[in-house]
Image 1 (spheres, rainbow, N blue to C red):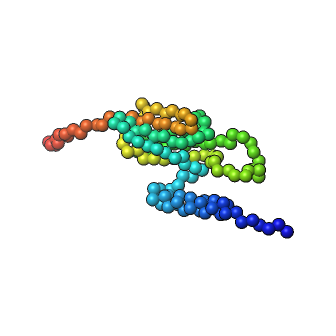
Image 2: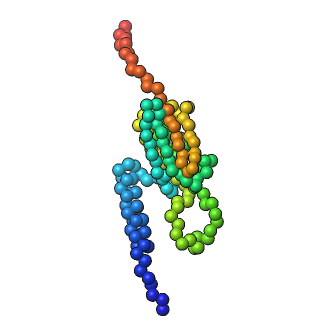
Image 3: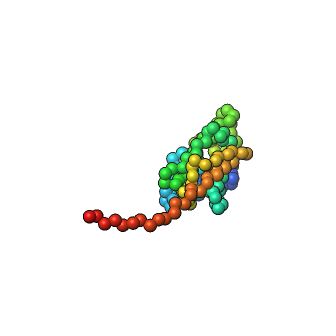
Length: 148
């Protein structure tokens, strides 16, 4: 009769997964529903005088498998899919921590951008978006007319 060995790392991994689920649920309540698709790449976003720069970490994703969109309500959407690169029977994995499958990320931009001049580049697993800020529309005085 074989004795079951206690594996503290397996228990830690289970605790981490539970905490991840809890944080995902809490973040969903705070910031809207969690994406229906598999995973969300980490994002860095900063602003210069002329543009918003967004960097998404998507290692192992082919550029043709990435879709970027800016909606009318100033929301950036990045979606795509990381596909399996080598065929390995699932039961042979010792450990698998990389995400495979669809991903989705939706971010509200801090200022309107000029989508026609936007640029997207991909290098070393990092998608970089350069989103020029839209020209500010100056306010103007509106003359009130009297109907006769």
